[in-house]
Amino acid sequence: MMKRLMAVAAAFVAIVVLGALSFFSGTGVSSEGVTLTRQADGSMILADLASEAPVLDVFEDFDCPICKDMHAKVDGTIQKLAREGKVKVVFHAVTIFQDEPMRSNSIRAAAAARCVPETNWLAFRDEVYAMQPAPHGEASGFTVEELAKAARKAGASVDSCVTSQSYAKAHVAETAKIRLEGTPTVLLDGRLLGNEAFDPAALEQAITGGDGVQV
Image (cartoon, rainbow, N blue to C red; front, top):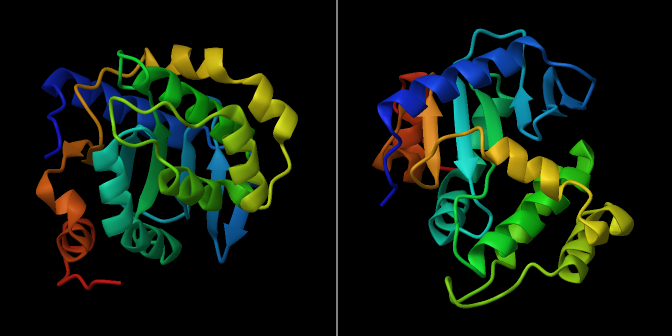
């Protein structure tokens, strides 16, 4: 079950994300008007920014088992709707855990993700979830060597950036600005979603107002 985001935090996050969309920069990776672009804070926007589509913010911790479960269930739907111009998706990799080894696992993975170019980022994200350390709360994982290998598997040769953890401090600093109670946290135009965030049809209906279909 997804933990709840504080009401004040929800409003704060919505303002931050919508602001990020307004200063969209760079060409990113495009597909028929839909672009995947990294923002200065490390978030990734998959969207046709010329559309009037709603904004879906996905806050995820790569060491979070429930995030992995949500990814497996609805990521295909989320990307499908984004590529159809029906939603603007903002992926936020955060570190929610304070205890070890989860905290260090999360930081290493998120820092590595910042090294990966837009062209390969979604594939790298898939690889990271596939290799999530288990059992949760006990296993150390996401070593820099494993992450560099995952990046290469996704098509990106960024070994030096990954192994040096070039973006670790920046990731921790940005995460500290986002007040979350847990992950995954999913907002649709600033409104916190519940169980529908885990169901493809229900999520599509929430986004489009239609019947929703599974992919």
